[in-house]
Image (cartoon, rainbow, N blue to C red; front, side):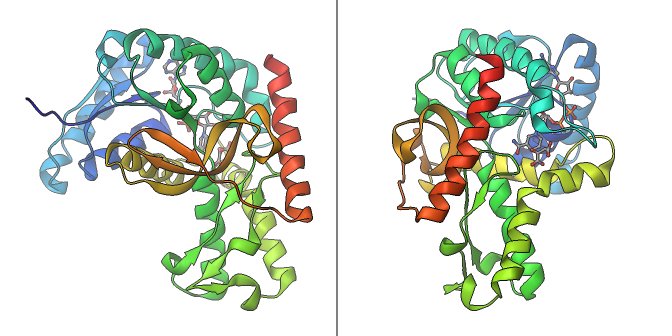
Amino acid sequence: MSFRRPKIVIIGAGHTGATVALMVAQKQIGDIVLIDLPDFESAAKGKALDILQAGPIERFNVQVTATSNYQEIAHADIVVITAGIARKPGMTRQDLIHTNAAIVRTVSEQIKRYAPTSYVIVLSNPVDAMTYVCLEATGFPKNRVMGQSGVLDTARFNTFIAQALQLAVEDISSFVLGGHGDEMVPLVRYTYVGGIPLEKLMPQAQIEQLVERTRKGGGEIVALLGNGSAYYAPAAAIVQMIEAIVKDQRKVMPIITYLQGEYQVNNACIGVPVVLGGDGIESVIELHLNEEEQQAFNHSVHQVYQTLAYIK
Ligand SMILES: NC(=O)C1=CN([C@@H]2O[C@H](COP(=O)(O)OP(=O)(O)OC[C@H]3O[C@@H](n4cnc5c(N)ncnc54)[C@H](O)[C@@H]3O)[C@@H](O)[C@H]2O)C=CC1
Ligand SMILES: O=C([O-])CC(=O)C(=O)O
């Protein structure tokens, strides 16, 4: 028997892709291959070498390479898709759909061909629809294709709560359901601070402000950056998902997954709580939503169906 480190492929060596690579290396999760278009191969190689040279200082010991040749993704354990364009101020995520659907479809066909047993995590926006495109183009089983939104959206909600209460962020536990758009559903009823329901610690009006800020959290950063979208927290979210799979952690996380009747959703990819472990999405956890939550969730799902309709 021989052992090897997990192989993590990141397609798109831009802001999020390179940041995922650095964080994966710092945590020594596995060897990394960055993939980008032939025109950006040299820049991707530069980033890979730069990350590698942080190893002696940060004390990590993994391989980091870059290429535009998909043959090099063979035997990937995890493939992360960050390829595509990011929005600029004034744009919605939906505005990216035609460009990114074509990119995600092409990339997914390469994954199917060269890394047919991999687990795929999609980040490219609009991410609920792009996860669907990837699932369709790879033909992989639904446990092996997932999208990132809820880990990031939940992290944003927790950050805002911690700031407002001036309490430790790691004591806050919450999660966000639904599509990755301004209609997402932070579940206040399931939000706790050190085991105490948030509603006991904060007035309703202030909670509503934080919910609204969370929903528009991506746009807030797009406006501040001026020429692109968030990448540090999104990369951290992806890395948490990679780690849950390669270390078989069986963590409960909000992840975009293909639903077939769960939460009354059929034939769409939406963010819901799942168990994420060594076999990818091992199960969906179905929660009872009250009427108000179900209505908000249905509204968010409706937006995702509308986005999907552009490309179906
Ligand atoms: N789901 C989420 O929570 C989040 C999603 N995003 C999305 O992730 C995507 C990437 O964002 P950034 O990294 O900031 O963008 P970026 O522009 O910095 O990087 C994108 C990279 O993809 C590459 N690329 C384009 N077409 C490609 C192809 N066919 N094959 C391989 N590589 C290709 C580009 O050359 C570029 O290096 C965007 O669509 C953005 O909206 C970003 C943050 C959070
Ligand atoms: O806002 C964007 O375009 C990028 C993204 O999805 C996020 O940061 O939540």
